[in-house]
Length: 192
Image 1 (cartoon, rainbow, N blue to C red):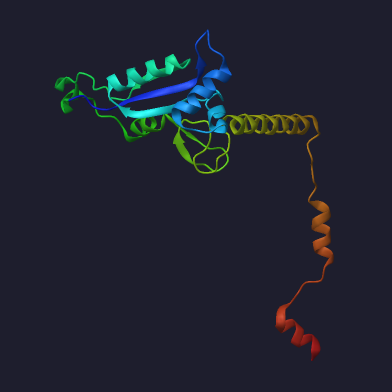
Image 2 (tube, one colour):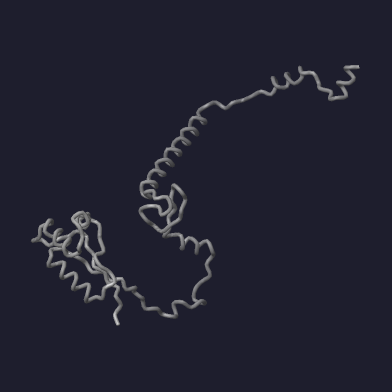
């Protein structure tokens, strides 16, 4: 028995000989939605019209929407199972790897949010704080470049300035001029 893993998707595309307003009204009537929701179907985003269908049902629905002027796609969500050869997974076949290499492999597809430090799979926005990751990474690079530039400027100005030399002699003379402190024993002797 075939699994019901098919979806019918709509991205706002219409047939060449169709008008957008007519297709929008047809879809609103067919789907039982109001005009506002029908307009959202044409926003450019892909919308799942119906899911968990058998292949025949999905193709029939795609043909029905084509009659209304809407160009839909059918997507198969059935997991693809590659041919697995047991010899590929023999333990003695693989060379032992260090934990750092394994950790790098695991985190290779992950990225860290520059704002909150959350590690997640590559995405456009952070799952924890919601920041736009592309914009945040660009901003962090700009800040890093500014910091590096300032550090280079400071190093250049320090190398151009004459070296500061300080003589210890004035400090030594100030120390000699101060009276020696004798502690409590000296204080009692002075009082008596």
